[in-house]
Length: 536
Image (cartoon, rainbow, N blue to C red; front, top):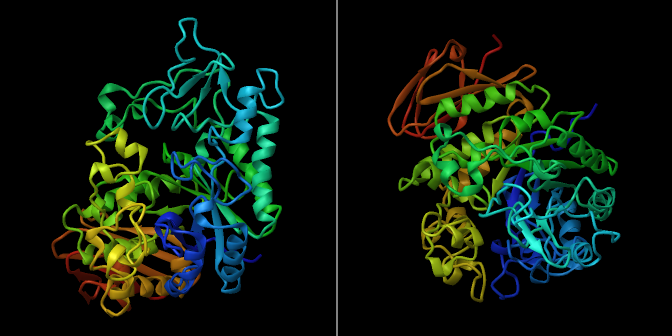
């Protein structure tokens, strides 16, 4: 049986609004993605994952959809989208959509009909409605991820509707036959037009507890800085999301996607890393998924990575999706390096990302080693950043325009960019790094090539070596091929020894310096090396 194309694939995450502006209006667009397809293809990736492309009031910048069958006017037209699909496919690149089926905009016609049609209307149950308590307060204690109760009162129905995120993002009711079939129809619509698959936003939230049971609190003695970062994290989201039966719903989604041929659907899970394995296997749930475990970590240690893969090992049938960075979290090199966002660290992190078992997601600019941009409050466009200022700068620091070349707006636009081009990125442009054989971009291209040229690195199992406190080492193995991947995660030189390295051969690509002697390898700070193991 042929190997599924997505198993071990490398996908490039394009945040369209900040990628490349083709018409000077300050917003990235679909013709801009098409114009930069040469660049994307030059990286050696297998496909692109596009941020939401549908019409939206942009309360949450595209994650509040008002029309699932259209294209956001800022981004172009249906013809522009079809042109991108056709050219990408002609080049052998897959195209995946970021589809948001857990909720819609409150301006979506489905919600307007659900609101105005009354409690007996044809779409009355398409959203999660509930009566207020006798004193007028919310039906239960569920909290929004973006702050405050996860309920909004509507006098037109004399009821509250549930919103896990902004008030303007009402929750679609997947327990309603009509709503569920309409959501699945969205997938059919785009698959029939040639889309190769989907990343499902907040895939753990499709189902809610129909009895509206209160969520339990995170015990006071177990609360971490993350729990205190906003009120929604102070309770365990066991009843508004993460229901065990959600796997059955996700399996329905996967089968609907598979009915269109060799397609791929993976999900985002915001809580509880075990859900990835528990909800996903070749026969249950989605094809793959990622959680925020790797995305929210502030310290990268060998124990952290070993623990994460130890958790996933309990679900051997699960194929993970691996992501260090995206449009929701601070950029990788800043998150792990702080003020020391050096090129050496950026290359180490990129090498690790491409070496771990799974389907790899690269966020635009990660291949350049971009640090997080520092923005002032008046420059923010993210509602989360504004809500929690100054505790959090929100998500805009990772969403600033892609730096293409020196000059105004760093080559992103001829107009006024929707977010300012980051001063921190001025020396890290694509143009500058393409001309430098020692740049992070050059290394990223080589790292992707190394992975794609190895069955072990692409599809092989992962076997941890040792328990060193500073060096992470593991073997990727497929058939007769075995590649040891060794990473010095510290800022000091280290020596790592293991019997598996006896008679090993250092491969051509590395970051930092390495000295192999017998079964031990000396590593400079933030070095990453790859070794081909002998037959034994």
